[in-house]
Image (tube, rainbow, N blue to C red):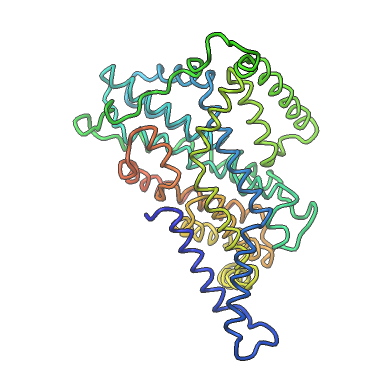
Length: 449
């Protein structure tokens, strides 16, 4: 696969070409109509780079990643992972512990799930090697990567959380405002068909992982020389005895804990007043405050966030281009034209399933789930609007295709592979098997749900 940024550039050129070919000529244009058309198209594209709602969405996703990873780096999380590492006594138990942990934590918070699962799998692999338990290490990595299999059907899912916000970048595209532009979580991640599908995969996927385990003489064991050593304990980086008031403020737990605890009181009040009706802002505030209470000092938390930020450079670089692509599709009417193709080919019953198929294909060109929603969401929601299909169902169709596409598109496996000392080719064959197994479950959920 080309680098994700290369794919974004290719997708941008494709959108420009299709937009130029399909847009109506400017009014009053004469011999220079082509030049005028192209000039206005490029202007719309560049203007889209500053789309405030797209950029806000991108920052929200960045916070999802860094706050989740920062919690995974906290001392309590390290202690929890250490306890889990000691649990498995056999190959089957090791694979089940890693895979179930990955699926559950990925559903709750994909930023924490991705990193936490990689750390757990690495240390279980290290522990198994020291105890003589034969585990196929790449398959253990595959089990950890299943944290990205259910993420877009869970609590931190990007598209459903965005649609649960009254003001978002799709509001203007759909011509909606106020409560009408908002899709509650009861119609997306908390819908019965989604919860049933997730429950089925929570049972099926660990079994498939265990069944794919090769014979003992064919296993690829943990290689201590190829795997990064565990990070030092977070407390080790703390100064033993602050020498100045400034150093005391940097390394005291009191300040970050008090601020974090005060922030968490907001969540208690919010749940009491609104129930479990969260969006990106609520989720990020919760994990930001929780992370501060779990780390031993403000500096410890800041260092964990700084380390996590390195993994979101792709979002920072790509999101302005997604804003430009959205502007092209809106300015030229390309999104309406593509939506019309789906309207003609679908019925209210089949549109969610066809959207699911389209999302699986789109994943090849837009590896990021948030980027895919920025590109594909407006098109499919317009089709849903015309056919009278609930927005929540189509939102989940795009989400399903995106998260299932992670099993063949290795974009989000890169942090995991780096932590575990693996290569993409080590896990992608197993990922393709999971793709085939999970496809009918998710397709049936959309069609019959």
